[in-house]
Image (tube, rainbow, N blue to C red; front, top):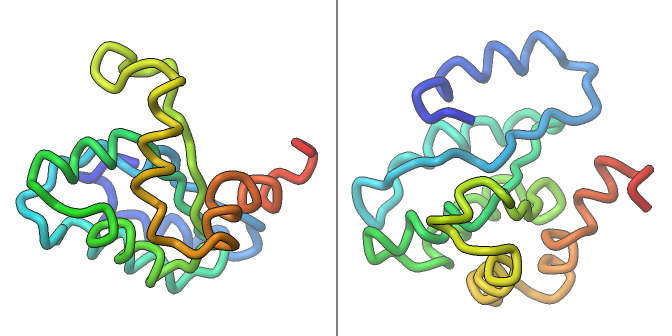
Length: 138
């Protein structure tokens, strides 16, 4: 999900209204301008489509830290728009291992960042949503 292409996504999603799930992978390698996260506006606009899902990963956590933002401030915007059952975790591993570290560090980082969520929402994020989208993974 390239930030420069997000404005085109509503038209793409509208072309596939019967698709069970359209998942935006790795929810963009964005650099935030500040801790108000204005870049989320184009993403949250996609929440009106019930078949759109987000896959978030550690690069999002690193990006929010670069502007001294809080995890709740950033992730909260997305969870408020989409709900916990349309957002899922992705490691983005092995991509960018030199910048984001090995797999062993990626999961704890995201667990820490999403600790503000109630347990059922964390369970959805860290596996339940993915299993609902791709039930054959069970």
